[in-house]
Length: 113
Image (cartoon, rainbow, N blue to C red; front, side, top):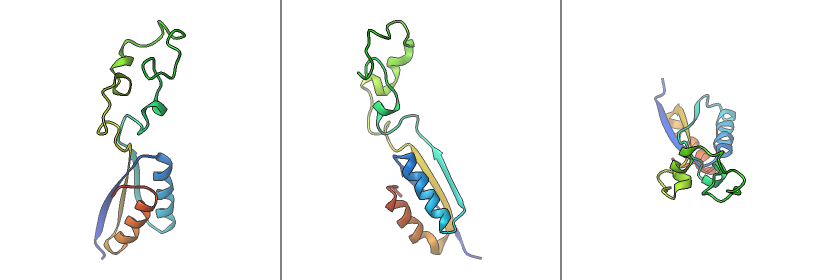
């Protein structure tokens, strides 16, 4: 019986992770799981808009914003690369002899193995 190994790959884009998952399934690999592991998208202004991020007219929304809006690191200026790290984790369990092929597919779709 072949030994199974797990490979963890991080993705910035859900679309790239899903495309890698589809490709791996087409190659006959079935033990795959895609999870979102970060609250924030890699592009914080895409993820959410707020008064401080500059994408909304602040006068238009006066009195409607939650008090805690400014505590979000994407709006408060406290964002760092560690907070905005890849948001998606693709976990693959495959036979040991399939590992080079799996790793090549993951990297081809932008995954960090």
